[in-house]
Length: 342
Image 1 (cartoon, rainbow, N blue to C red):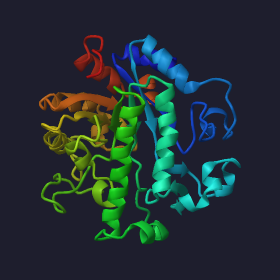
Image 2: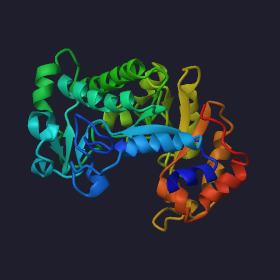
Image 3: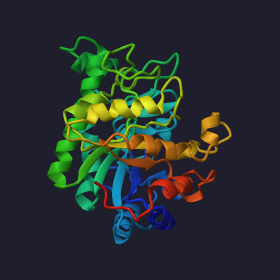
Image 4: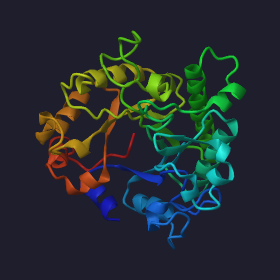
């Protein structure tokens, strides 16, 4: 409730609330266990309904509530036996790949994609959420010296693809496209948005890419984020542009116009993910020590009409605002109470 009140005071119009951090649930789900993040123990009923409460209380304050799901992450550790005994991943260990000390569902298995969609759509059917939100985790971020072992799934389902990378991208495309259709069927009017890693491809790899030298969502996470926008499989895209203006490898001032051009004429709305958590952090480069850095982001983005808003990560920093960066954004750009999200 304090976070929701703070959102109103900060003249924001939407909160994005994580309800499925890792193959679990912050609502009474018939498919997956209660999240350990509620009580410290996976599967333990907290005695209340966090998602139901969040939707009702957000709407009571005039805020939209976007339910944030991680579709494929199973655990932030690598030990299947630590999951609660009735966890779907323990019942179907063949669905799970261990990689980088963490557990993931194998997106190459049609039964996995079907199950995770069923689990997530349960929340959409039960609650009047304004949008479904996917984070940037699809195939996991690369870990040096490790291989994501989906050999069995590729051998069974990879026929007809030029290589494993194309097959993996198709698996994620299917997940996104089918989830979009499922949301429209379960609750017409509920939107679907994704906040991917901020670089699709570098121009050195693909002439359609951005003038960056960074990890590439297309090649490293098998997430064809540009395609999702152009095909309008998502209602909004919120690339995580978590870099400062002038950052050599991924310059905010170059990425905003690149994404604006991708969104132009697509019908997909563009919001920019902002790294509020970096503002004033002593481990960050000098530009982030200036409380005005984020405000300059909004000033720059205003030059591109495709940019319809900004998303500030994370709620903790919206509340504490240790460097005064959020206060500067509000003073410079949010002079009036927020309009409804558009």
